[in-house]
Image 1 (tube, rainbow, N blue to C red):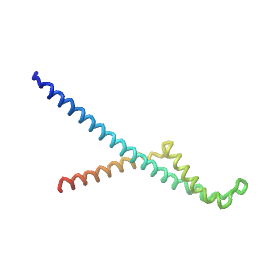
Image 2: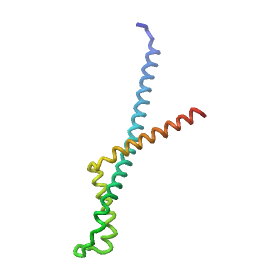
Image 3: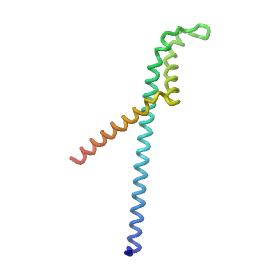
Image 4: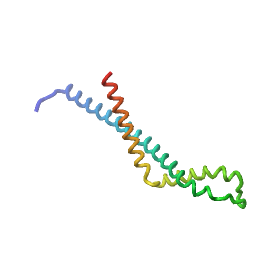
Length: 121
């Protein structure tokens, strides 16, 4: 075994620490991107579910017994949106997973295109 000396071993240790730090930063950046894409996908799924259940409420007439009137008609859309959000938060219909995959794939293609443009310039 070759003796690298104190300075060489310190350089190797420092280099390893820097590499680990860079790997952690890249991992953290990827986690943030995944969190943002997951949130966007979940929001899309909630909106999709809201649009799918909206026709169920369009045929219902407002009941004057519990308020009814124009106010209930106006706020019914907000209620449907909240139903969609809650359904999506409880697991939804499985759409968010596929939307997130497509977002990540599109982002990867965009990043690859930017990398190609930088290396050509």
